[in-house]
Amino acid sequence: MEFTAIIRKGEKQFVALCPEVDVVSQGRTVEEALKNLKEAVDLYVEEMGLPEEFKEEALVTHFALENEAA
Image (cartoon, rainbow, N blue to C red):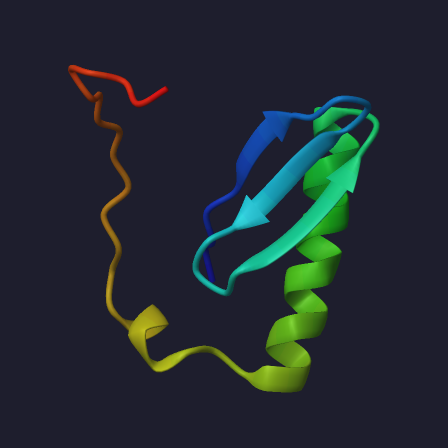
């Protein structure tokens, strides 16, 4: 199974999000945040199972807004 990880730098730690299951974790480094996210997602899937929409392939992309909101 493959999942997506979105990792951003927070004030003191890196925050990692898995959008497929809406699970968030954190760590002092990118590697630690990803490791912690994997553990959290594994526990989530073990307890809750996979969401129905996960069985379909997802498209991950980026986009820009021309007029950024303040």
